[in-house]
Length: 68
Image (cartoon, rainbow, N blue to C red):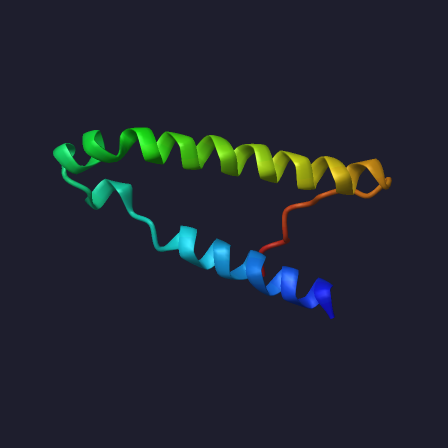
C-alpha cells in the first residue's frame, strides 16, 4: 500500500534528522555547509508546512503526542 510506504519514508526521514548533530560540527565545517544546510532546512520547512496544511484542510488537528 502506498500510504504505508510513505509513512515508512517519513519515519526514516525523522530518524535520519534525529541523527544530525550540528553542535558536533566544527566551526569551519558549519560555515562550509551553511548554504546547503540552509537550503535543506527551508525546503524541509516548506514541505512540512504543506503536509500540515493538507491535514488541516480536511478538518483534522495535528497534535503533539502525549508523553507517557
